[in-house]
Image (cartoon, rainbow, N blue to C red; front, side):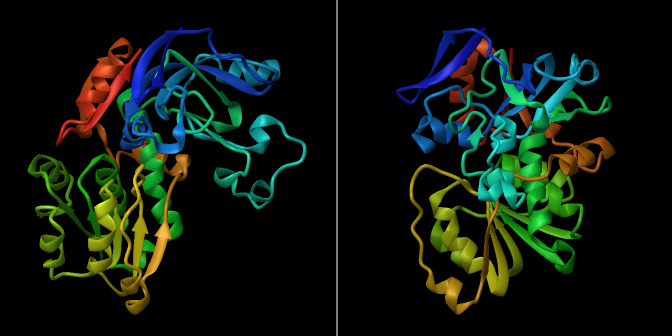
Length: 334
């Protein structure tokens, strides 16, 4: 199969055998893969990953190993998307780690992470995941919608971590792909959501979805001049410089949710957290079932974020295009 690997901070095409399956695993033919900021950060050295990147995907089950005939019939040929953390149970370990015993599989001490840590990802014609990681895609959800399930689930994680309905308003700092999804998800539970961003084109997308927007330059001094503070603020700039203004914009005893991941360190002053008694929450992967339900019901439609789809064999060009200023979601199609 055609696959791409990270080599010297670039994507290099290789030809290799399709993944070998463990019992209880599925071979998935990738139909669409999404490029996100984490993939770009991996090319900059994030997690020191040297395999095939890509963790946002929708695919079709091509084979299943080590299951009953009935289970095989259930999955073969079905469209799926998949959770990216492969835990103790996925590998069949008899003695599971403490995190898995506590039900925290996304924090499994021995986990691999699709396209991010020790597990080849979706920038390929095929990938392999345990059946327990897979979710069926409803018939009324298109491939173009389903490829967003993983980042949409990450946005939904905020609903699991924070009792959002107790807030009258919320702010999202950032206007990129994940920030857009976060704003859409928050808007299903909170009547007023304000997005702060630098790019008018991106902010216009949010406005069309019913999100209030405010354009800022991105300069730290400009952000510190913002007068309105929020009890709930989500930092999703994808930049090390986002934390300082996020602290400034969070009111005393407010909640600040951090979503950005990046390779470089962020400059941090802890005194605003202490003096304002801010509750700081790190937020990562989230509930796939909730994300799929939002797509199935039509409450959230992420497809306006799609800017361009490249053939898989043009993955290096797609990555370059995705890094252009103002670019939204870029997809790969094998």
